Length: 342
Image (cartoon, rainbow, N blue to C red; front, side, top):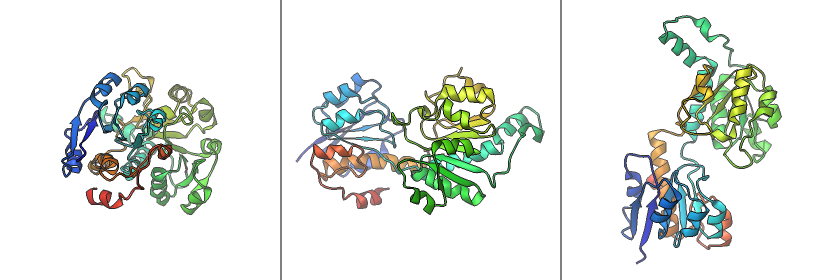
């Protein structure tokens, strides 16, 4: 019987009960928890691993080069920016994520930020606590019906958000060069260029993944196009927005405000200029979170390992599809396994 070593490089949860539940039926799997912070620590823990589950620990080129037996790396969450995808692919290592665990949560959170900013909920609360019971501190507030929401990206999360805001009478436009216009039209959303999004929207919500193409894509040029009463919502990744350009746009009055669940460096430094602005709302990268979403994410990350090691299949959520040219596995038949455990 084959025996496999599965290393969890790092995690921020109180226990590993969901992962242990997935691996419990397989005596041939040894689950090794670690709490790595550096590449050297990852190499020490994972050099002889058959599979890796990763959260934040860096898996750069040096780590990939040191992996002697690894067949699959799965990551908690959607982004795989902790992993050197090119080198993993060249070495025949499958990389998988969990792209669908928190679609409703992030869409709900984006809507909550839109409503909180538009209705000045946080500002009103702060002033009441300072013994200022006066609605005028919230001025100006504009009616949402008839306003336009511009979506940057039109994957599953912004599609869910569009469906949630349309009953409020909000017009929705979206920019996504990888999404066919007919998909948007089917959902009552108008396809637009990024320039049109920025110049015509009353609210802009960012939902694009972080890639080299999208890093800093909302910057000085885009803010210059926006109407002064427009506000920005970001629940995707902090570096998609040029933070210095955002600060300048807010200081100059070019932009009315922002609601941010993510920033460039997390946690945000206590002396960051955005923290001093009362027209900015923050939440601590929590849009993804619900108890159900956390269980689903952790369970599916572990199941990606089972797909490869136990069943000899490509993981259900394979990211680096080019690896199929270097390693031959069976097509994924994982739907029933995932449905049974999530």
